Amino acid sequence: MLEKNFKEKIIQIFSEGINQYFAEESACRADISSSLISLDAPKEKLHGDITSNIAMVLAKQVKANPVILAQHISEKIKKIFNQRSDINSFIDGIEVKGAFINLWLSDKYYENILLEIFKNKEKFGQNSDFGGKRVNIEFVSANPTGPLTIAHARQAAIGDALARILKFNGYDVTTEYYLNDCGRQINMLGKSLEIRYRN
Image (cartoon, rainbow, N blue to C red; front, side, top):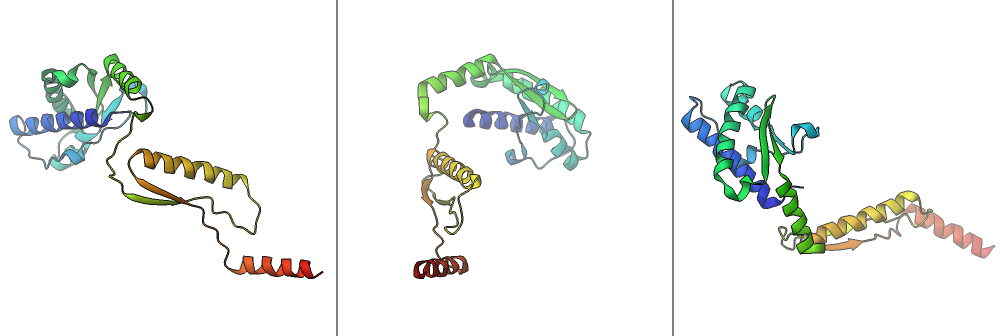
């Protein structure tokens, strides 16, 4: 898990490195926005802890070789990381594989996460970014004319977990079990009960 502020700092450094490269060393100009920069977990651990395909995204704009572009950008990023004492100790290495820029997180990063967990306990990971936005979650809502199934139990567990996760993240959550007592099936059930009662 990448802590939000840490992820934003890495994106900012990528953005600075890219802008430096295009301003200083490239004849090309690219429309660079930090929203273009994605940080993902690589499919294989041998490719690091964080990977970005930004060189491939930009290569299309500037008609450049994405592998060479990734190498140039990574050099700029390395220099910026070395100047940033607030984040440099959390990065163990930067490497280009293909056109991907891969980063390895240091042991200090994970130690820092563990300290945050011990400090915040059950509130670790909580945020209020969603500022009380209202959400209504309807779940299970089993048909009252039929038997309960294992699927209803699964819906109950998932619905309740989802409601708790959203509450934990600042949403104003209401939950609802919708009792659908209208329609043809209920009419048929009522008529069958009436017939059974009269007999």
